[in-house]
Image (cartoon, rainbow, N blue to C red):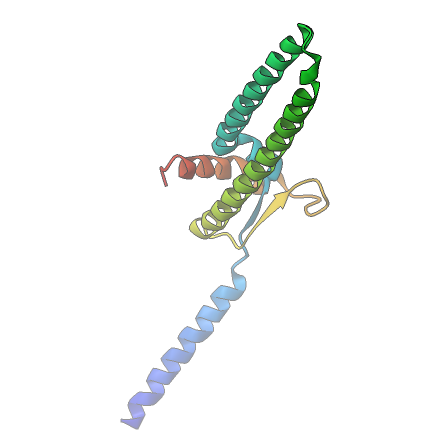
Length: 157
């Protein structure tokens, strides 16, 4: 029985050494995306932008109506106009911030899934803020990631 253990241990040791050698030669897989292009090309962002523009158009219609009433001599509406304009601007700002946070949350979640799915060790985001100062163009996967992102948003993945 003991004479069968040594060949088994030797084989296991050889396999372990070969795995370690293989792993030591494997280069990490890394790439980068241009964050601004991802954000701008994301279909979810485009849809939310349309919703925001519709909100802005409704607000403009309300303010235009108040302006027309004030032009007809109803100057007591100035305070209503000012309040309405202030509330509309605040609401638009809140919607913009909410949409931006929601969009980046979705993009970041999908970046993790994309990296795992494609077996990347690192995916860097280039924002122009010094976090990625240079990368070879061959490592740019922005278009591939945007395609994946939009497909998952549309429910295709």
